[in-house]
Image (cartoon, rainbow, N blue to C red; front, top):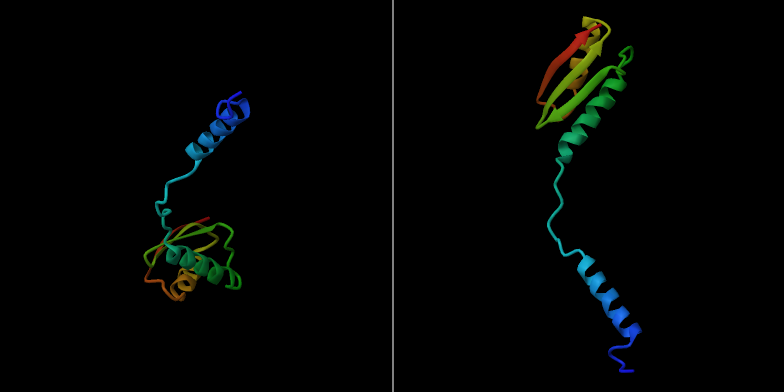
Length: 103
């Protein structure tokens, strides 16, 4: 039997062709994530958690370009103001938007 048409050679060629076809050629850059917003969100959450007497379980934090949005629920108006003041004290925070509701 001809060496180029043997079943092993043909099968090897097909496997090689399939592997080449499956190889990824996309070298585009991955979507970028603005880590500064993520870091700011984390820093604000940490700052809120370090406030004595502030229940942060129901307070959500979002950050975009230095603007921090607090939403969710606070136990009292004083607790909401304490959260806003704590968020304002974090480096990198330009504006704090208080969208919290009092329970």
